[in-house]
Length: 446
Image 1 (spheres, rainbow, N blue to C red):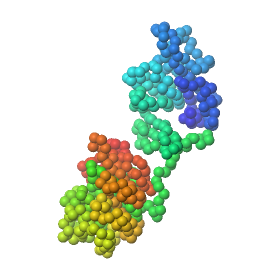
Image 2 (image 1 turned 180 degrees about the horizontal axis):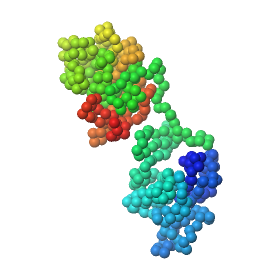
Image 3 (image 1 turned 180 degrees about the vertical axis):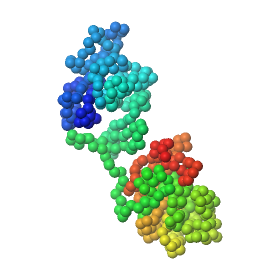
Image 4 (image 1 turned 90 degrees about the vertical axis):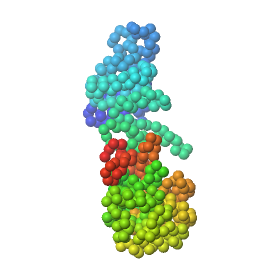
């Protein structure tokens, strides 16, 4: 009804078509809201199916109205079909806005999905072309009823209302799974009735941050920068999770290219970032691994044993917290300026005890991290226990989850962040030019 009320406020002609309620019942249902139900530009029509006789059939569904002041000047009962419904509603033309509540009342016309699709399509065309209206259809969403899918497919937009149990409370939710031709937020929001108003929330899904200015470092991937509200958060921990099918190298290539011209990088590699693979990755972006090491722009703490430790700035595995602390202090003294840490948390967990891991994680942020620097942890939750995964998730200011789903499709979700579209998911699409990966929201977008 709010849709029609907005039209009335703009001086438009509006029509409410009900297949289930009388006009009096509609008035009672809307009595708690500030709607102008007697506006001169607002019309009502009621239609429903009733058993009866037509010229062709002795026992069939016939077209009836819910009101005594609505009548059919035909001399016979009309069958309850799309063409006769249109014929009746044609008398209400023209209209700028129409609410058809609900299409579930049309279900008795046919159980055949294809015929129902044609019925809905014809109604949409009728209201659009003949009546000249923007039409809002309502429908109940019954499980395993394909007619609901037909309506969603045929309509230009879909607004979904549903309830769900949160803890011990039943909550109402609204989402917009489809709005043809418009890039929109598909995430679910909570719907609340407050007095005479409907409200949606939350308006902001980002958690309260204590970062001073919420500085960002570009990931080198435009779609990911848009999703996160500017890039990876500086001055706090960032966690990137992945599975065995989605190596972090795809995201790190663009990040390294974004960082290396301005900051040094300290890398604690994962198996996917052993020396040969890291060299290939850097080469794709125009960097020489040996030149970066020799010029003190790249430092490696080799927790996986996959690097030549005789090279400058490649440090062997550390197995205790004092050793790890010493390595970072040595690197800190050698670097002239700012630096970014990219740490394979999985490899650190395997070589250090739980207590040392926690201490190292806190020290990395509290002692070595400046407000304009990055601290990125890479973690495969499937290969570490839940408690350690929970620790890294809890201590991160920003969490980016990646993983492969059915049929090889890989997705990225912004799970936690002080900025950006928290809870949104994009498709990871490999491409042939830098940064060699694109985050698409929706799929196919640039």
